[in-house]
Length: 417
Ligand SMILES: *Cc1c(COP(=O)(O)O)cnc(C)c1O
Image (tube, rainbow, N blue to C red; front, side):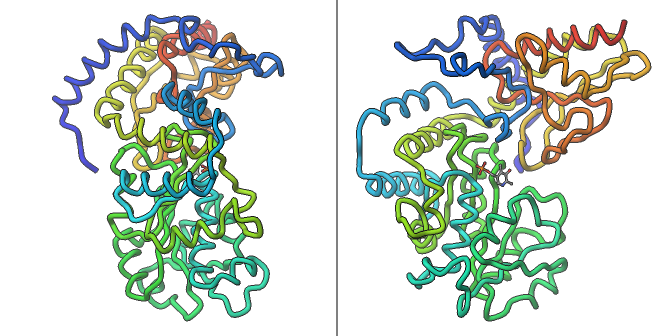
């Protein structure tokens, strides 16, 4: 990964800080205005929104679409189109912009994993589309994976009738291919695993087997949108609702044209397919294309500088409390953006980090901290600990860092009494 020079970072950091001061002084009340005539259904249903100091977590509704993406979705919602014409045009446009042969808008990265597997099993065999996942006689269905790459999305592969073949060493990998091998699976953000991406691709291709990479949460950097297909992975999945900031219910499957075409045949709107329940509509398709357009206009160094500036403003607030320390941490692959780690002396502040998290959630406004706070369920690559508070700053809206900083200062300050 390219390292940004310290000087460049400081320079851009200062600019972002300057920009942040004016944005940061806006109160949320001056924030996004509701579209004319819109009913606030969160209010009507009694569901209270929160400030997202966590990150792009599905259960917390992931990300907020930038205004131009929201506007594109609202406009697309006003007119009917032929769904397959839209799928085809969006796929061609995305493939061009993302430097690959083919692209498919899916209902999420998890759906992209399923459609990738279905594509590998059924390509060139239309009746197989009807047969999976139960009538697997005569179909290749072995998926090779590194033992350390098993994860919470295994079901997205197994659901196609596939079976895993586990390997640990390069030698085992080379010997694992049989006449039933249909795909090899790589989890891009896996923390273990001895076989490199390059070796993984090379050996699969020696055996003529397509190679899939799940990079769902692995932008930024922006260039990851083409890094893995250019490295030779035949199929790569991204989540549309995480760093790309398209609609939450979207994902991207990128890769070789023949495999993308095969994935599409297993997908909605075709009815008797494994993907029929993974429908995306015009709002999702247009929303993801607009999200990609928005994301490609961003700049990695400027985004990083902005997140550092937000973390800095929160740090200035909490450092005033004796026993509290704060530093920035960037996870190596997934969620590869500055996070603020706040640690404190439990003898001086008589609260566990989970209690801090609960107080932030119960306060006004509601604030959600990163789930790895207090040793909660680990988020990809983030450190945990009973007295570690993790603030994900990248999904904060303008001005919200000040509110998070003020509330943390209040809660930690109370604990220090
Ligand atoms: C988030 C994530 C997914 C699922 O993404 P969706 O877009 O919510 O379907 C799959 N794999 C990994 C590694 C993820 O981080």
